Image (cartoon, rainbow, N blue to C red; front, top):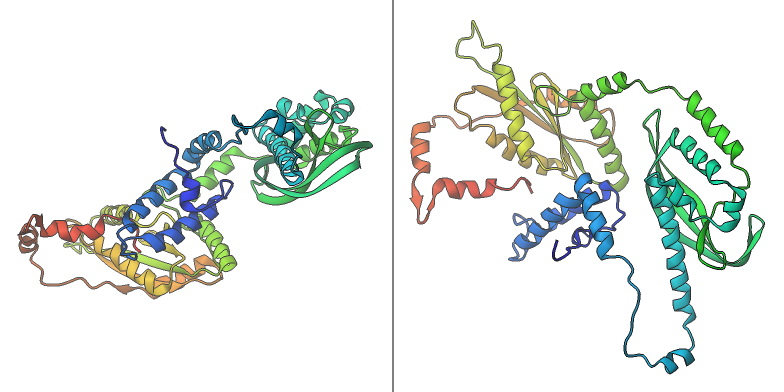
Length: 430
């Protein structure tokens, strides 16, 4: 790209922010700048920038590519000056605060490089960033064997480095270093056998060993640690690939490609926990489709599938990216509106269902209900909502031929159908 645009700055998030933080920031900014809410002339352009930014860093693959470009454009550049008198520069006393800041940045950069190499399993490169005493105590073969043994039990994901404190003339692992920096590192790990994600904090030290900043490993013998992780890898239950595949299949509805009831419930439970943590409202809507056949004695067996496929495509196309939609039974859908009050969810659902009334060939009735979600079993909440569904009344007495002819009428330079379609171009319902 010719001109780098900072999408993290556009969404007002840190470049190490997790996906849930990015989603929440997008939802918040959408509420502030969406043209339906904000009538400012600049709101449209601002919303375009927000959508472009979220389209890139809201997608994991595109974010990885963009983040590499972002790191290049935001790397720390050496300071240069062409107008400083050398004699004055030599005589000027260094600023202790600036020197300490430079040291901290250098130490942080080395630790970040160490974890970056570890995440990408470039363990030889990570080994090169250890202190000389660690290299003397731990052979590279032991270090590589240790990392491989750990990787069979845990998979390291994201990490966040936070400066903690500085020590001077500090004894660490039997060696006195002139300067040592202590960092708190937040790690996101996945246990290989269970696929369970966990977050932990660990303390890491970076020392200046006389020539460069190095990571302090602190081990004198890795053999016991290697044996421990090898034992854990053997003791843990083996993953059955067929079982994993079947579990993944059961979470997707094969007809529509939406979440199945179990897949929807799993995602909804995460949103419920997030809603309780941040105090955001959460609303659930259910939609039931009941085909009506002209020949009641011999109804078309494929009519329900056709109606479900048609409605699923409309709902999936027009629902917000941050909302959840799934097929909760053969004739019903469930929609979880995140950060949405019940009255707003009712309005949003009505807009979605209006678009489901446009087909002239499929004949069906729509039943719907909307309930707030606080806590509890999501499948029970869905079942309770399905019992409250009521039929959606359509306008009667409409001559579709006259309606079609009426939409062709021009008002100035626009057709009436163009004007009615203006509010249907956006996918956000706020």
